[in-house]
Image (cartoon, rainbow, N blue to C red; front, side):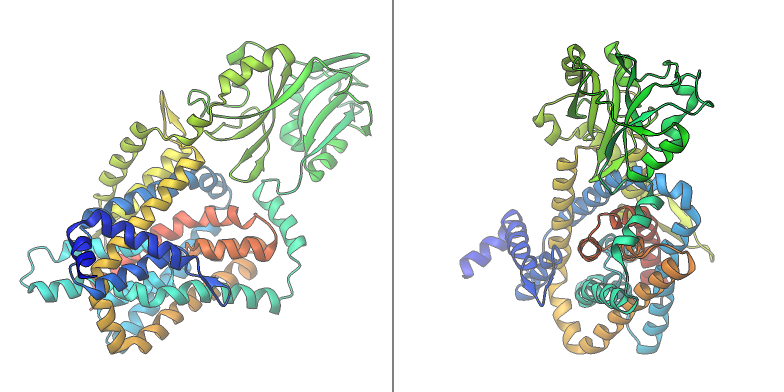
Length: 554
């Protein structure tokens, strides 16, 4: 065993993957229905660090893991975040800031009362709110403030380990407590999650229900004689129309098509969209239009061509020189109304409707290589990370002449949110295929947790023996306070349905395990939308607050 220990101490590559592998195994074990998930890597790292001081991974491991993790999170969240933030910015900002701010004030008060060191208190704040990037920001800020310090090596090491120690103590209840709050709220309030899911779908603008294909006869005199594009039927109803039947002639629906009384339009949309279309256009009919137009077909495609990603759906037809209607877009597990102006993203699943002899050209344009779907563009990835790291070094002034920075946790996140929303700049496509994004995101967080865990093992064991019970209660109080406040604000004060509220609670805590529970408990994927909307605001708030706590709490 000593020879294996010597190997681990001498070979960081072997050590990091030993910690990651064992931690991943531990994280997937269920105890009382709860799993630690990726946090298992942190606790295995702590165990290795406590067992032998030589088992401390180089700083470059956790730094690299951190920036890769937060950057890929930002790229994925950017489009949904800006879409919802534009419509609900005040509520989302209030929810994303209020709970972390209250938790920080409570942390400050408790730290002074219980004489908990600032470094440990900041870690308890991060662990109670289950936020790893905030922990990284606290560690980074503390390390910067101690440069040139006259403290001895042991004292310096103990101080630098403080945030990770506090985080490790508070994190387990940070996950479990959040789930308990959701369970209790669902039972006490007797929530009808099916009805709440319908409300969430309407509020988000994303169709969680199945899309319906329906045929509608033009009977409204207000639209007769108008061009289809001028009538704005898709924008007003939410249905996407693909075919028009007039007598025995069937054509594709294009913006220039002139509507006449008796025309039959074929479209797809949610049940509510169909209802609105009946009011705007006319009654439902059964004309079997698709069967009468064998030369018009559809094909389901993945957007894999980086020249297409970032273009509006209407530009597909322009690119192939023939009308093409994009009738469905599925992105990140949800349906998006395929308006002509909807910007396509790399990895979108779309349904293209056009004449049969054009489909192959459309397929070649959009892309159908599964190899491309799994590969990342590391030129744009590298450029984005450089921008994010530089942005993180910009000081944010605070009262009293001091300042904080977004740092390695916040800078790449903010840059990725903006670039993910932008999509592309000329030939550079900033977005990534979902498979590649997920793989890099998981690798990043695993490297970070393994790195900080192995470096804090000795301090964790000492602190747990000396103040374990007090710190556990401290961290639990932070978790419950933030979760209950978010639940009350979202559901009672701001009127969110309970399905979205569960997503908001998980998002404010930036806790994927709680999001998985929210999806399972509600029987819906609607919490994902609320989670993605509030996650960036809450994350940035906690990154800044964690630095304030670690630097300014006396």
